[in-house]
Structure formats: structure tokens, C-alpha cells
Image (cartoon, rainbow, N blue to C red; front, side):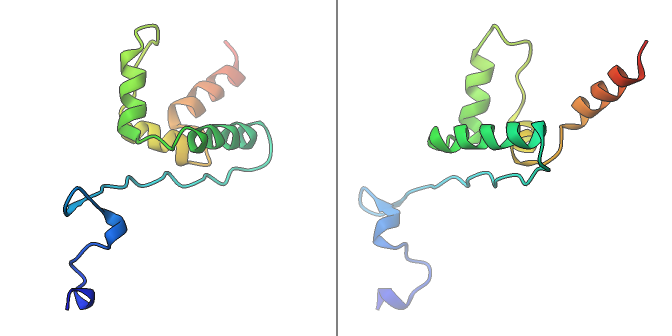
Length: 102
């Protein structure tokens, strides 16, 4: 009785004779405070969802392939930037320096 076994994939999870379909996890929506950062995070998350949502590996590969960009973050950095309600640590440091003046 296969329907009692928990190690058998459901029919919707199988493709091509029993090979399991890998479904990447969707990055959770960040809950940012109201204001410009919250609006930016909301916009980025909506674009992410409208795009599929793509895997972090795919996003990292697209960024790395664009030679006009100054750097290429890894998927863990992308996940922190996209899923966190705060500015990335490096951005906070830059913003603090800018406020302090020369």
C-alpha cells in the first residue's frame, strides 16, 4: 500500500517516471518599517515574485554575467538583501559615514 508510505512522492511531485521535481524555496517577504526602505523592499519583493520567482542561484548568475556591474554578490548575500527588513550591514556603515560628514 504505497499510499501509507511517507517516502513516496505524490503524483504532482513526480516528473518523467518517478524523478522528483525540485521546488526551490521562495525567499520570505521582509517586514520593513514604513518609509523609503519599506517601499523599496516591497517593490523588490513584488518584482521577485513577478519574475517567477527565480532561484537565488539564477539571480547570482545573472548579476555575475553582467560585466557592466562593479561586483557580483553570492546567493547568501542576495538572500540577506532581499529577505531582511534592514539595510545590509555595509550600507548602514556607508550611510553612517555620510551623515558624519568629512
